[in-house]
Length: 349
Image 1 (cartoon, rainbow, N blue to C red):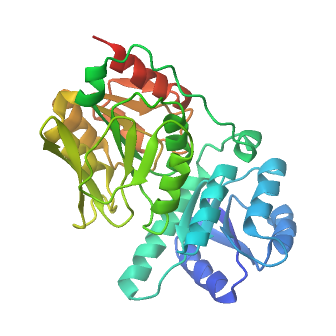
Image 2 (tube, helix red, strand yellow):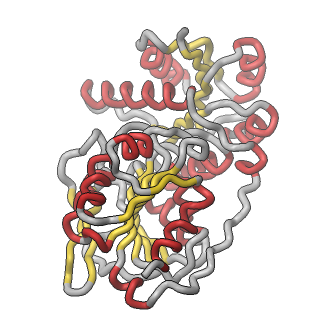
Image 3 (cartoon, rainbow, N blue to C red):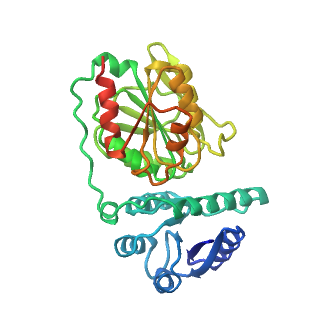
């Protein structure tokens, strides 16, 4: 049976474009399109869609207010349609906090190839949203800050010798926040890839940095990786690491996408496998697809210890499942326990 989609967007042009794109897939059906949330509310009752696409900014009631009410009263999968602006990125990150499954930027009809790529991506996101594990609406509406785990027992030399690499995709913005918020400042340096456009990564880095103990920056390339600091891949480049003396430096590369992503988790994990080997800890979190599985396997073969998020706590159990299936993870844990398991590993002799 086809996945029923309701489009909510104040632009008639966008509603028409999205209807054509989504309706062009045999397994997707556009059951309606609404110009504003008030009209959408009645259409949801009448049409009972499986997935909503929701514009961020609309008249009568903005997308955030509508989403907040929806996730409290009738939680359902939502894919946000966002403008590639600083304002759009801030609002979209808030939408993900409120329980939206995923987001996609509004298309740029610069070429037929780009438009086809956009069509493939939004269809894939809608399919993933249909089967996503929705977070509890109360938790999504009022996220409580996690407390950092106790840092006692992590030897000083471990802080300098170890490197933590994290990869995530769909659902990853909230999952990464959960892990970072639970880690104390006394941890080795962290490198992060989250699949995200370049207009969004500066805002995401600032949000992670505001959580407390860990200092988080969007990587510019060439930074010396320091304990208690995390370096987020910018949306325009792959993030790599390079051995330098007793530590590591960040590197950026605008080479071709890998697994259709730039930044790619596989690119980061392969670099960590080469440059850090047994000194690394790999973390793979919620996300659709298989990006990161082969790179994490290379890390484990090089002596790294890896952990994957479990199915129950994932929004989409894709990337962690693929990593587990190829034998790349040593341990599987609920999202709430990932930080504690990392610290336990760091305390081991």
